[in-house]
Length: 130
Image 1 (cartoon, rainbow, N blue to C red):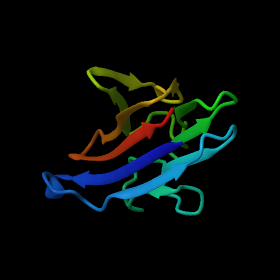
Image 2: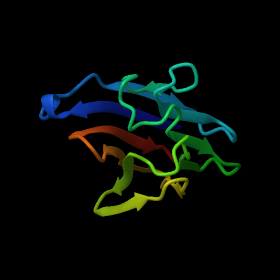
Image 3: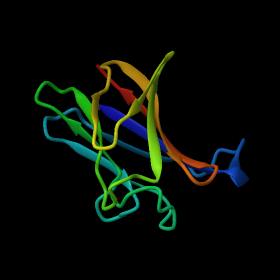
Image 4: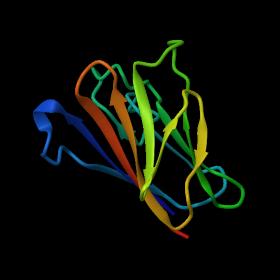
């Protein structure tokens, strides 16, 4: 099972818990959860006018062994207007544009989509059950 929580945070909301959204999926091979602006394909959707987030920005995919990975999908622009960071405990890494990383089993963490032009972000917490 992969559980996701998402909060869209802008400078005006800092310090507040802004509209938390949740989604989950069993760890079945081929299962997919998406984060982005397109409500028709994304289980977790950001505001339509937050253009630093792609139509489909992050894709969580369950592999054949029941292990989840997250991919920062390449959008329509050659250079993104955001950056994506993954934090698990004290470990942090920047996810490259178009890159994929495996999530730890039995672990939790956060993926932050940070706007490069304004003080706002999309914070996606995850918990990957064993």
